[in-house]
Length: 337
Image (cartoon, rainbow, N blue to C red; front, side, top):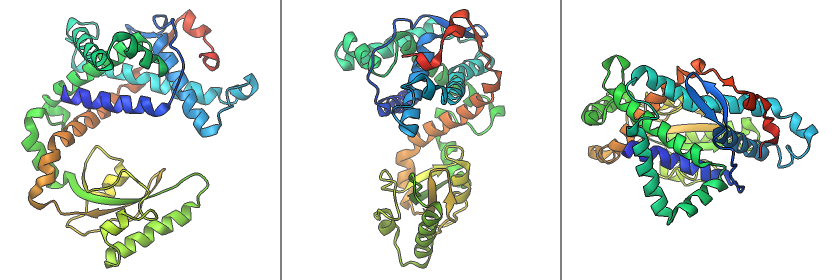
């Protein structure tokens, strides 16, 4: 349950960051497509379309969908992006069908787990009406909420199943925390701090790279301490970055792993590493008596399990094929509201 609760916390944080205020459609039970034996309901499609529209409006401007002429310019991106996102849940279900064929999303085990979790969440909100009123603000129909939770429980079961299969490789079970710790210490994890220079809209990327290179030089020659760098609004534009952490193989961007994992001893400084968002510089830190590793081991193991499982699920995305119903074919995604 700990792994599942962590996932749902991340999902909720994402939903709350969108900032949407509208009411939920009554058409949440309409079937818009099939993926094999699985039904794709309107509520899921609507949620993805409307959240993607909000993401695009934040990028291109609030008025892009206001007129048919303007909206048409963004149709291809909307339909392509939503289709790719729509594959996510069904890739999980296809992976479960292969590795966990005895468990169905409609099984009593999964549906009872959904009922129990929903009951607890509704109790936190005070009552069912308040819970679903909040959900409607974020485009989430009742059927889509239940489906999302059911898929999450399926994926949690998939993690446990995959971890029990040695041929999967590098996926540790909850019972293998000590082995996971040893794996981290064998070069698959590193205790680091970083500085991050963000490429904000309109900024000179070469100038940002130069700032990161200057920070690296000063960190290497000792004229700048790690604490000074992290506390600098110029050198560290990641406000969430306040303390060292374990960067573990398979959880982070491969470019960041390639930069950080080879750092051999405390004080070693990485090369400047470029990503789409900006520039990173890593410094290896000391973890006396591995206290932080012990404190964070359960959290690190959970992140490792989800990341490794997502890698496996990703291999099923190409097998997700949508067969659209007549109702699904009739929908104009630009006009979904």
